[in-house]
Amino acid sequence: MDEPNTGTQSISVEELRAKGNESVKDGKFIEAVLHYTQALKMDPNNHVLYSNRSFAFLKLDQHYLSLQDANETVRLKPYWAKGYFRRAEVEAASGLYDEAIISYTRALQLEPRNVKLMESIKTITDIQKNKIKGRQNTIWICTCVGLIMGITVVLLDYTLTTSPTLNHPLSMVAFSIALAGVGFAIGKTATLMSAWSAGKSLQPPEDLVFNETNENETPVPEKKTKYSKAQARQRYKQGKL
Image 1 (spheres, one colour):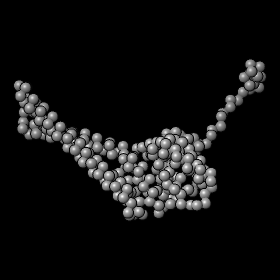
Image 2 (cartoon, one colour; image 1 turned 90 degrees about the horizontal axis):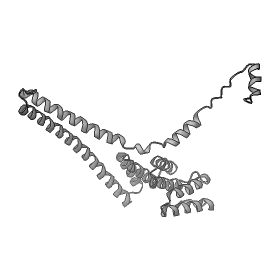
Image 3 (tube, one colour; image 1 turned 90 degrees about the vertical axis):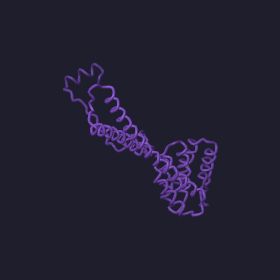
């Protein structure tokens, strides 16, 4: 894991960071998050701790929290390549390949000779190209299927019925083209839904949103029912007051 470049940290923070790193090596990412979080309470401006916790969150598939820590790392240390690398890793895992390429490129600008960054950019670029090619193939296949279905219906209507519904060449062509258009629309919709799903994992967890909402809500005082003196005496005797 990353080593801090400040030499005047308290021992307790250093020990917690070391415990977090050890937990990461053992695959105990929840424990690592706890250690890093405790250390950050003591040293809230430690960019290395945010970077390490971002990595642990990513391993737990907590993309939203991982990105928050990566962005905090960049904010605290804007000229440190590892911060942009952390952010790129989260964006890539969330399917935001364009954003990931930008973050990787920013990291590479800070460390031009970093081979790992070069390989990461190439890998993500290839994934992006294959993704685009796959979407185009989906649209093409759906369009062809629609056209074939249209032609099939026209031929069956013409050969198996005594009075074909589509008895004019133009109507036959128009019907086939219409089904091809339906296939195109289906393929386009499927690719758009796939594109919209990218980055969905970066949405804040529901429990986090719920807690933030409750914190911002103003408590509503409980309304008390007013009783007459006679009603109050009766309720007192019944033990209801």
